[in-house]
Length: 215
Image (cartoon, rainbow, N blue to C red; front, side, top):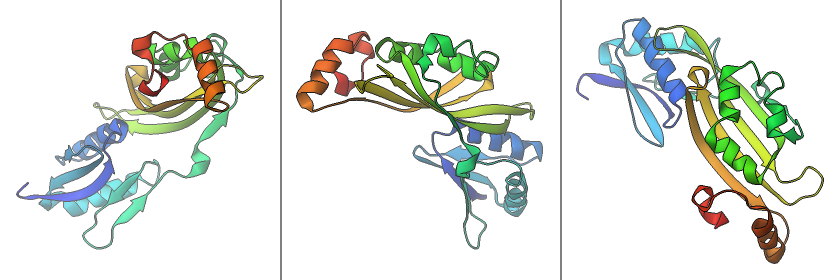
């Protein structure tokens, strides 16, 4: 756009970062536009470019999100340190996990675990083998600090023998009112014949809810 300059590139699906940057820059009186699918370009009026870089750089001292800043000189890349992730292995049915902490009293996580997508997957894969969480600090539309989550769930048919599992990843924010599915895949253990027998025996989801490769 004429009179505008690229200030950053972010993940095109990461609405948490999109909302945060709009609020952050807007609070400082800077208009912004975020466009793109796989990767999104963040643009600001050219006159505000240097100030926007300073504002985002200062924000990144206390928050962690994946972004590339286009400073006009050398690009600066920021990622999320691995040690910011928390991983637990509940090894219990989904309905039991729902009443344990922190899931019971954390609206965003409770909403995710109760969402139709997760509860449908649990029809076939009822046991929760692994939960991996990344807290995402962001500013909402009113510029209030909020916490969202980057979440990986691994559900499995059995905790005792390898039969089949499902792994799903989501972004969750706005106290669970916003849930965005990033990826999901099933796998069945054993050779082709064994895997197919397990799939036929344990698949409980309605046909329209199964992944294409589980048909």
